[in-house]
Image (cartoon, rainbow, N blue to C red; front, side, top):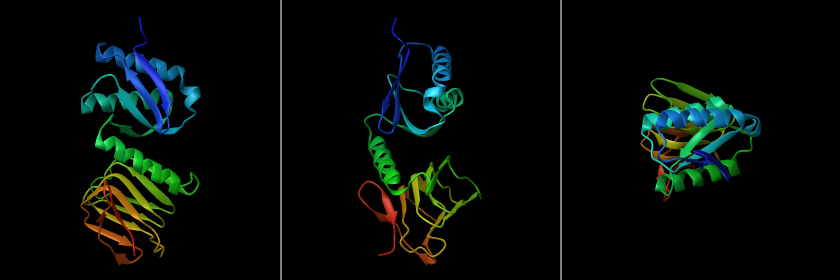
Length: 196
């Protein structure tokens, strides 16, 4: 019998192949066991994850990601969608983010900022999620969002007018670099804002 869960590394993190026929609850148990045994290998890493072999509902995807994170003690930055436009955009944004931000010079925030949440950062920040309409992000450096900006984003908050704001999609309430209001520009596959 073949292994119902196979893990392969890739440039962005790992690809996980799931048996397409195994019942979901059994597959979830297999994932927990396999990743618990492999936790030492991952060493509390932050990574992107790609699922292959079967399609999950949103709830199943969420539960599977939680099981992997808990068992392996890792942080999943995003789940790539195989052979889709979203996958290509996530990969491009991750590439650009990793080139721009050294680990000591920036941080990742995983999750959507909701309601009246405020996130402030001394360094550049990559947000793996959306910024909802009433949420605010303020960084003294750059802000990159792998989802959609609906709320307010301030980059270069300490007067860094070379800072940028980039996102998969922008429908912002407000964008600012330093103390100057800016408008988003569609840059092909993603949106960005910077001072010219």
